[in-house]
Amino acid sequence: MIKKNYRRTLTACYLAFITQAICANFAPLLFLKFHTELGVSLGQIALIPASFFLTQLMVDVFCARFVDRIGYRRSVVASEIACGLGLMGLALLPDLFSDPFVGIMICVVVYAVGSGLIEVLASPIVEACPFENKDAVMSLLHSFYCWGSVGVILLSSLFFALFGIANWKILACIWALVPLGNIFNFATCPIEHLTEEGQGMSIGELFKTPLFYLAVVLMVCAGASELSMAQWASAYTEAALGFSKAVGDLAGPCLFAVTMGISRVIYGKYGAKLDLTKYMVFSGVLCLACYLLASLSLNPAVGLAGCVMCGFSVGIMWPGTISIISPRLPRGGTALFALLAMAGDLGGAFGPSLVGAVTQSAGDRLQIGMLTGSVFPLALIAALLLFMRSAQGKRNHG
Image 1 (tube, rainbow, N blue to C red):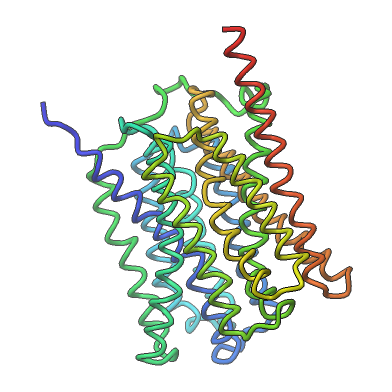
Image 2 (image 1 turned 45 degrees about the horizontal axis):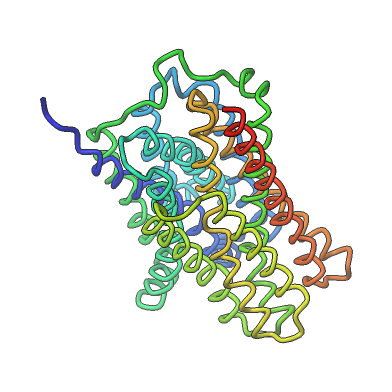
């Protein structure tokens, strides 16, 4: 019998997370170019990230119901095709429409479908592989989204510096080669399923399970804690702390992603020696401290440190929630992973919106908005303590 090489499966999933990072981070680098070269209004540009995340949410719901019927391999290969076509389409479609914005939006929706499929499928594919220390493997897997984000920002900036931003269409085609090349990996690597066909929990069964609601709260708080800071850090360091635009961009998306990646790699390396739930509580406390530093400190350097360290604190929250919940709901299957991804995306959409709304109502004082964001790590800590109490109760009764 030929031994299955699950390392190839892991490599394919690493590249899938890098693909997701390309889809999320490449277009925002071109927003100003879309505005000046293609005549896309700033109001229309604001719809691009909103449409991206809304499409991912819709894909999460679709996956919860239909992916088990379609099959993991077909679905994940389709994810890479959609990402590749969407990214390559950015170089072609805007010129085919009288309104270039229509072409851009078609591409964004197409690669958002692929990105949403990756978000739902990569984690259960790895969870189903017979690896030891799966929570550490899961943390390392999710770190590739961070490194992908850093790579897209830095390598794209380098490309623009060397060849000019006017050649952005060539770069879009280059980035498309990552998912298109990964099609072969997913088409040939071994892929297992979390549950036998027909044995996974239905959406209705999950909604009757109290632990599922706790998992949803954890994922909403994880997504909101991460993205409330990530999406506002650049504006915050520039407007509230008085740093230059270049420092704001570097300290915002780039350093935040670096520290988040470092956090996930550390747990990936030493996770076997750590209690994951307690480590997540520590991360939640550190995240709360980072939000308070960013919002209350009068020293710009301390406020900036709060922004950067927040990336480290949120690193384990999303993959950690998956790792502590999936063993407690072994029949959760694809529906569980899809609904958890949806909860994380909801948090990622709601958190930054709340910070923005509070900032506006407080007379554009971003520090007040950031202070509001501290409610998410606080709620995460409370939910984790409730989870630990529940787990301890089950052990005592056992």
